[in-house]
Image (tube, rainbow, N blue to C red):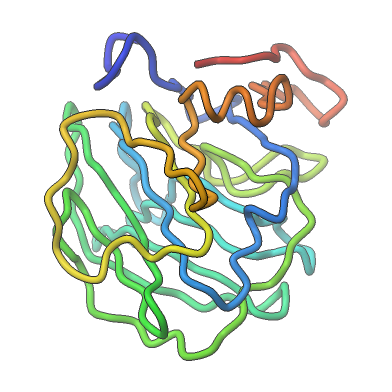
Length: 231
């Protein structure tokens, strides 16, 4: 799309019927170890009121299959990036990073767990305070990973993203950032041995082949209007 930072395309989702799902995998089960979730985003429309827009989630609403969600929350006019997780599949634990986003601006965002501490960064700068996660073990949801929305139900997902998502990388076992850092001026590399999958990279496409789906549900998951590689 026209707003791609690297290469020729980014994922564009419209906030109403667009999102991507990736089959459940041990790569999404962070357990009690270090991890990093990061990507480049650009808003087409900002949330208002109590609206939220989800970057990525491993979370099925209203069930005991909730693991984690990374989103932007307008929070009734006190906007923030927010990461939340469960240890039992139902009870959310929230980590908030106050930040006022703007249109026509690309942001590199990340959430990183290093030992007992979780931090959220925007543009390589930490926002919010260190969160003491202790020895918490994130719940092992067997739900799909959802990009651009929070989970998926028969009625569709919740809190859809409206804008562009590019170069999304999920790294299990490595907390990449323990303090402010310099952002890359290129696409994220995929680290051999780090379980780091960069969505959009040839390594990712080769890893999951045709299981990356672009779905537009009109009523229920059986109503799929489009599918296939979208990168």
